[in-house]
Length: 292
Image (cartoon, rainbow, N blue to C red):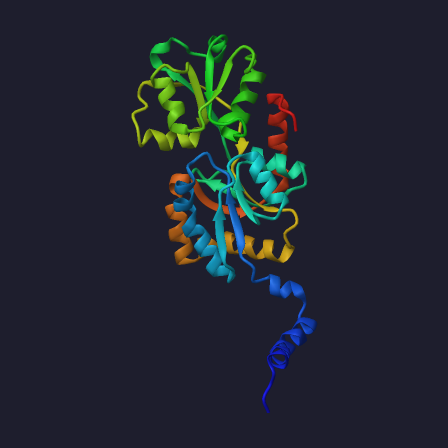
């Protein structure tokens, strides 16, 4: 029997129509590609290089394709989460807190840094030959922060200054370098009187460049380390599977090697997110006099 083109197409499509009735639509969606966003001040090319091994590992363990996207800035990350353009994203605790308050993110994992802590402290530093020995002497000077959306690069040090009698932004001019190295160089070259960054990062940077001419004059209160979050509309099953894969990285040979390679990003491992740590960020925002 010779089938017409119309009859042939109908015959071929019948099994798929049958399956679509029997199989729930969310099972088809389960194979859709996941997107992992990274909010960072680093160039996109560097972000891809640093995070591709992690994404490849998680993708293989979950049996789901996964790609990296790099929203440039807080506003773009917010829109990407809102539109479902990112599923999971690595962000600092300050940005996460703001996204969660807006109902756009849920916490999945907390980063434990290479010191074995879930928090870090930010250090304020100057040149040794500046004769500045305490933060009171910074009044009327300037300070280089990394980013206005930073946790260790802005929120924690600004909170410390405010609670110790220095009104950053009024008595102390604020500039933003968008780069750890630039903050250091600006102080060394006397473009800025002072600068601040995460203490763990300061130690890591000191292994790459000569910091002997710098002096730390203050150390902030603790702030929470970075977070892996998920967009609030992502299904719970996918979130849980992702979480278990990442938590168990330390228990597989490949996962151990991968974590070891993330040392330069000050990452030791990831553990399940505990919402209680948000109280630390909330307190810092109040002290820094930043709007929620």
